[in-house]
Amino acid sequence: MAEARSYRIAVIPGDGTGPEVIREAVKALKAAETRDRLRLDLHPYDLGGERYLKTGEILPESVLAELARMDAILLGAIGHPEVPPGLLEKGLLLELRFRLDQYINLRPVVLYPGVATPLKDKGPEEIDFVVVRENTEGLYTGGGGFLRKGTAYEVAIQESINTRSGVERCVRYAFEFCRRRNRRKKLTLCGKTNVLTYAFDLWERVFRLVAAEYPDITTDYGHVDAVSMWMIKNPEWFDVIVTDNMFGDIISDIGAIIQGGLGIAAGGNINPEGVSMFEPIGGSAPKYTGQNVINPLAAIGAAAMMLDHLGEPAAAARIEKAVRKVVAEDIRSLASGKMGRSTTEVGDLVADAVASG
Ligand code: IPM
Ligand code: MN
Image (cartoon, rainbow, N blue to C red; front, side, top):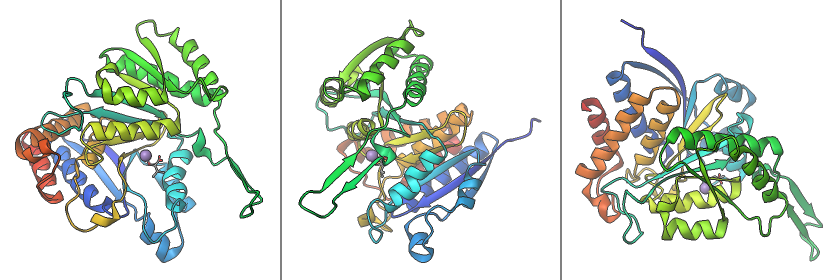
């Protein structure tokens, strides 16, 4: 018999409700491990607000070096009410994305049958697209600074860094992804060429150049404000959207709410040549910590994306199918936008469906 395919996976539950949802994602992974004859070596890491408050450490170099040798990372949530805003987000989450060069943030927007969307007259047929967000540049690089801080003449500068190579690798990934996804084969560039005439001039030129190599892909362009509107009005127009870091952050939250909310929206921070990290796209929800009420489906979806990325599409599809079954048959209340079940119950339902699926 063939030896089990084995993977080393770092698990960072993180802050707030992160540990609760990751626990359920791990249940689904364990079920898939048995069912699909994999071997998943899970290595837990206690990075996050608690560790910082206890030790002052955010992301030690030695830990980063260990993470860089994993096959993938599964992350819960980052953000702690007792830690000043930005410290963990920048020092841990963005640091991981940047240092591991996870230059794509892949955010599928899929409405599963049985899940409520706030959009009137739109269903699973209409809501099925993917946002490809550039993940290592733009306004997120921290370029800029203060001048005369705290005075009446203060200047605050926040720069958007866009490199030719950074934009090109992201745009290329989006074209390849769109081709592989093989649905409507339409790629929309989301920008702001009418105002941000340097950054998006570069994006548009690169987009056109790369498009010439993909005659099978239809291309389209929308300004970010209009794209935001169309995602609500006509989500069926979209197949794959490629955009910069900041716009991608904003439009992927619009995507999350139309697919049923942050409780169900998963994403991947991808380095196609290195170590990728998968996470529910919502935050640490401190208000709900420890209450066993948070929807774990986003974390479970992130675990499925991780398996797919590791080259285990059958196991990934089994988890996705289990999620689809559970939302359609077992947690009917999701059709009215409520969960009506505990975090643990939902996790158990999915793990059982994976085991028998
Ligand atoms: C996200 C989050 C992060 C981001 C924050 C927590 C830094 O909103 O993953 O979308 O802005 O990228
Ligand atoms: Mn965000």
